[in-house]
Image 1 (tube, one colour):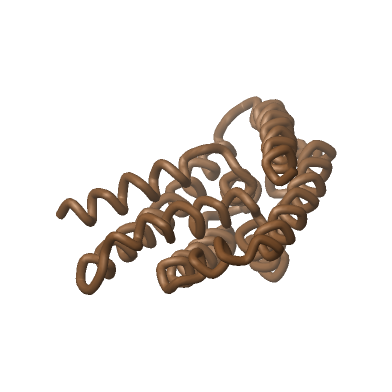
Image 2 (cartoon, rainbow, N blue to C red):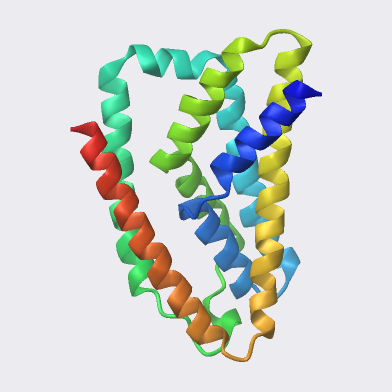
Length: 200
């Protein structure tokens, strides 16, 4: 039980802060005409997190920590990706009807993969924190710890999609989404600067 609680609290603490993944899933919940249409984004993000968690627990985090050049390449690539996302989110302007900005399934999947695998904060959290924390476990305890972290990701992304879908029922939904996008863009820019400073 202690192992499950540790994995649950650790994963929840890492996934709660505002980030590119969370912004994208929330936005899809708000812009898609129905919850079913927003499922591809949530499912893809959950699968990507599951893959990253399994890889980190399987030893990927140890490998990256040993190769400084690989860590630097990941950080630089991640910073550039965050800057690109910052500009895209800042310039995005929701239409009067939220359905007007809905992404098709293929774009949802591709975008969810990009914000998962190219997001430096997600990589640092999952590979650096979860992967390192898993080293204290073995056997059944490691399985329980890993499963707990994975379950948190799935529950969180689906809950975020559900909360986003409630935006359609607000009278001033366009104004709220604009404020949300601008705030998210500022946060993502600050994250990029922070990671850039830490890489130098």
